[in-house]
Length: 296
Image (cartoon, rainbow, N blue to C red; front, side, top):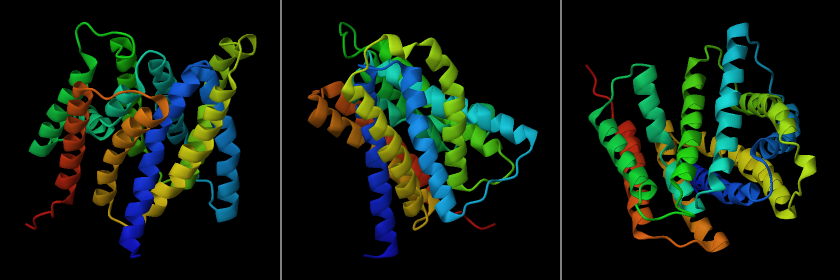
């Protein structure tokens, strides 16, 4: 197997694990408060990342005050905000809908970069934004439907995607380069610090914690968080950044498939249209980045 093919396999597996977080979050939502689950996730993942840093002899970066502020904001938005909003949204919405919505992350990140950083959008980017919007609208606005197809639930999940988009934006603001393993370790440690106080106000010890939700948190912490990190960066090291970005389209597909297999959810026409629009949007962004730059 060539180095490039190995990279493709690692990236695909990483995104399959990302898709599985939707199923884990759905199980967690049924038995744990969101901040408690988030704090527990990071409490499990943090020492594992510390051990990996020690084994790989990864050094801590030297950071100034502004960098620490950015990292805390990054952890609050991308680590805590994403996880808690996703779990809260999945108390109301279906995992299938959530799978489609999280697939819009690359497009949402592009929109945030345009609005906040003032980046000039390419025409392919504008088309991708329109396609992703159409995909979300197709599943979010369905008159006469309720229950699993919850507009408030879908809105919370989309807010989680916006938080993850802000995570990417804040990361671009960091002037000091931070090794990926060190950054993941910092995010889990700071995420734990941010989540633990609101978790105490949820008073999880007063309610019953289901065994299923507990093991879902452990799975989320070890397999997608740590394992997904290792697979993604192992794959990214073997292919170009543009090629790696294309594999983000695997996450929503795997989430929908897992929702059907493990949760017994059904896929309707709106969801098929939605995921098709999202995949076209992500693919368009990836193909745009693959285009060679014309020399002057």
